[in-house]
Image (cartoon, rainbow, N blue to C red; front, side, top):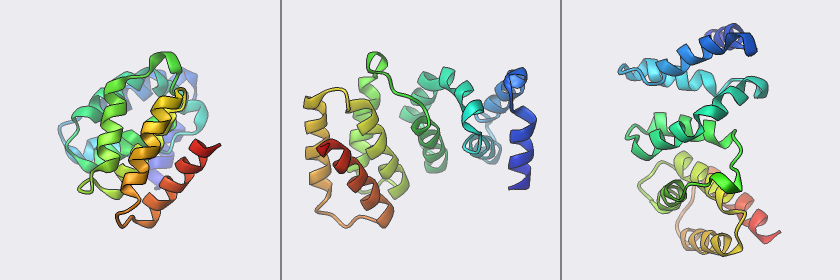
Length: 162
């Protein structure tokens, strides 16, 4: 953790965008450990530095759509949860990805929980899509859910009901 905090301190601030880019390039490294550690570092950015990642929004989504490694996927979804989803820039391929993953009992619980939240963040602008999300969530409520998955389910169902 000390190393993570040291890296975050090193790259913080607007004057260090080139260092953030170097760190981001490490997330693409062929060495899984390097890529995972770089992604994990980004999850510890303070909100002001996290804004730099907003420009990588579509690239992160593209990477999620094709990622086979559950740890990398979970970390990238975590980064996307810290980003805004604008009504005008919604990607239906990512909505479909989230709906598929949240309903897939073979997907890791953390990925499913993140996909529940991300599906809501994208679909909240349209009542008909929220209805589809509600139906999907009701469908998975019959299966045994981990505490984290159940919590994400409850949070989103509460938001849908508001």
